[in-house]
Structures are given as C-alpha cells and as structure tokens.
Amino acid sequence: MYHPPTRLTSVEELEAALKAVVNVEVTQSESGRGTFSIHSATIGDCFIYGGSGNRAMVLSGQRSTAFWTLTPITSRSAHGRYRGQALENGDLLFLNPGGEIFQQTHGGHHQQAVSISVPLAERIIGSEHAMTPESVMQHWARQKAPSASQQLDQLLTQLLSERTSPWAGRENSDQNLAGYIIATALSGGAPRPLRSSLANRRRIVSQAEDLIRSRLHQPPSVTELCEGTYSSRRLLFYAFHELLGRSPITHARILRLHAARQKIKTSTHKTTIQIIAAELGFSHAGQFAIDYFRLFGESPSQTRR
Image 1 (cartoon, rainbow, N blue to C red):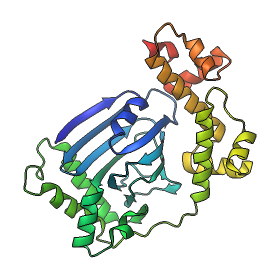
Image 2 (cartoon, rainbow, N blue to C red):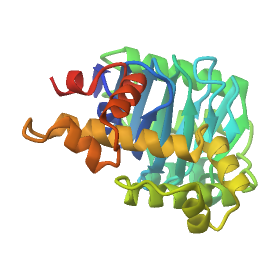
Image 3 (tube, one colour):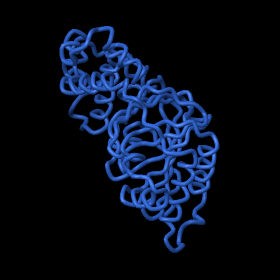
Image 4 (cartoon, rainbow, N blue to C red):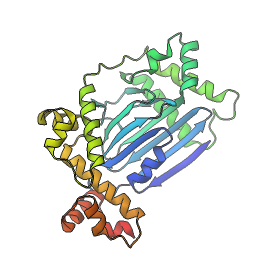
C-alpha cells in the first residue's frame, strides 16, 4: 500500500508519524521553523519509509522489537552521527530490533529505510543464507558497502515514488522483496557488530535524560547529573556531545522548551503561557519567550493560534 508524502510542520507530528517502527523523541538542534516530510509504503511484512527535514535534529529512543531495519546512507544523510558513529556516504546500517536510538542529523537531511518483520527476516536469513539470524540481527552494525547501499537506496526510492509498486500484488511479494533486500545487504558478508566502547556513554546519557525528564519543572544541576550517573563532569559533557551533539545543560533546556510547546498546543486558553512557562521552571517570562523564538522561529503566542 502506497502512502503519499505528508508535509509536517513540527517535530511532534514527525514523532507521531514514526511511531510505527520507533518510540522516538525528536528535538530541534537548529533555530528556526521546522518543516519535515515523510512518505511510506507497505508491502506485506515490509514497511518502507523515507523522511527529510530542513533543520538539524536529535532523535533518541528505542526501535520497535517487531522489526529489523536496514537503512542506506547517501550524500543526503551522511555527516550525521548514529550512536556516536560518524555516518559516511556508502555506509549501510543494520539496526537491531529493540535497539537504542541516538541520532544526530543536519539541516536538509534525507534518509530512507526498510523495516522487515522479525519472523520474516529470521526465516530468510536462516534458510536462504545458512546463517543464524542472531548473528546478523542481534546487534547493530555500520558496514562500508557503497554498492549495496546505492542499490538499496535506488530500490527504496522506486518503491516510495510509485503508487503501484512492481512488487505489490504478486504472489509472495513481501517474501520476494525481503529476500532481494536481504541478499543485497548481505552481499558483502554478515555485518560485524561494533565493539561497544560507547556503552558507558550511552548509559550516562540515558540515565541523565531520565533524571532531566523527571524534573522538567526543576532541571537538575550538573552536580546532580554527575551524582545520578556516577560520572565526572568531563565524562558527562563528553558523552552528551558524542551522542547528542549538545551539552547536558543545552539538552535540558531544549527538552523543556519542547515540553512547553506541546503544552501550549494542547492546553486551553485558560492556562496562560506564563503559567505553562512557570510550571516548567522558566522563572523569567521574557527570557522564555526569547529562547522559544530562537529555537522554533515563532513566539509562544503564534504557536497557540
């Protein structure tokens, strides 16, 4: 089933559109009004999708346990970072079911992916490639595969640009499509899982984010974040810059501004913007309005209209 491109005007709408395959939080890293688009197609147990945005973003969360995902990295999605790894043109990402997401994108980013249901992927890997599915799907990997990456990107572009897919409506279409995709991805051999040198940094960021979210109204200090994550100030800041491209202080402020934006959008006019700002720990209404405009390219009152 083909779904025409959808234009989105907020990261909240983008989050909702991505919920099918990821439980993700999206925040802007670049000032100005954000515009995004997402388009998708479903062929049996294969979900194909692509998205783009005009602002740099950070995505953090967890992938669905129901899908195994492949995403080619092209010139339009290179130069970002995924789980601390710099992405280059010609890379191919193997994303494990239920895996963590820490992705930094740039303005103008465009990326495509295909998510295959776990049972179908396991069946094809085990029967067609004589590999144990766990050896391929259990860990995430970034593989240098220019040819396979280009082939998959071209295929996904075709599938997302046609209302009637050449794969749709055929007998066993999803199995044949998934088989072709997996064969292309594995043409250079099984992906090698990355050594988890970033495991401690991911733990630090995850624990710090949990603490920040639990106290949006009273953001924790750097000292409290160090205590809560059992890390030094230097390691705390390094982990945040490596995975999110921001300092913990900046990240906390951006999370609070996004929370304020969500409340402004959903609350009634009886709840004033000043009250919402105060509830999220912004003690100076004027500075809140300035920070809000710098991030979103519009005033809080413009968001409410």
